[in-house]
Length: 92
Image (cartoon, rainbow, N blue to C red; front, side, top):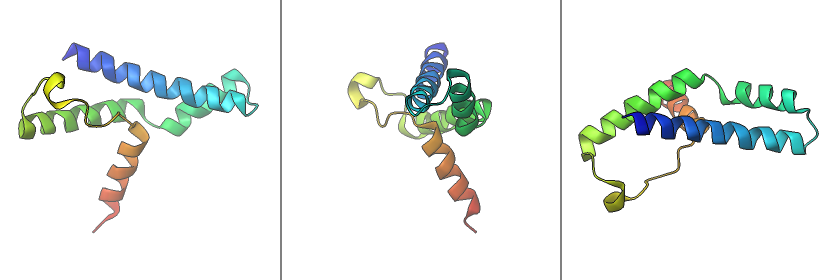
């Protein structure tokens, strides 16, 4: 479980680092770029909890198969996850 938490933290930090670098390349200062990337990303704690919930559900449905058998399904994209969740909540 700890490895999954570490992997999730690494993915989030990687996403924030890339978004920060993109903004710096467009002329923002490093501190402005980081602040904007974090703000754009949204609630990190909520993303982590939601991801953990979805992982638990998938594990219960699909079983906990080793990655060498199933391979990665999709690279974690927290913004896409949040957009999908928001769309699901907006539907009647």
